[in-house]
Length: 70
Image 1 (cartoon, rainbow, N blue to C red):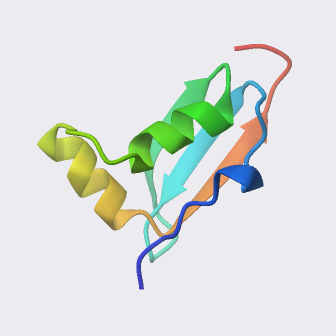
Image 2 (cartoon, rainbow, N blue to C red):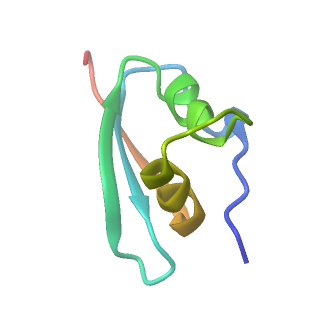
């Protein structure tokens, strides 16, 4: 089963995001001034680098940690 991204589930706020695989292992950590916008960019239909495509295919869940500023 693949991960389905729903932009409305993520805030338009600064924070860190942890992408996890099906085993719950963290496969990527990132930060953004706008979590919703940044996470949405991974799932838009555009040409991504091969490593990004592979990363997105492995995502099973995304956890966010809100912060006061980037």
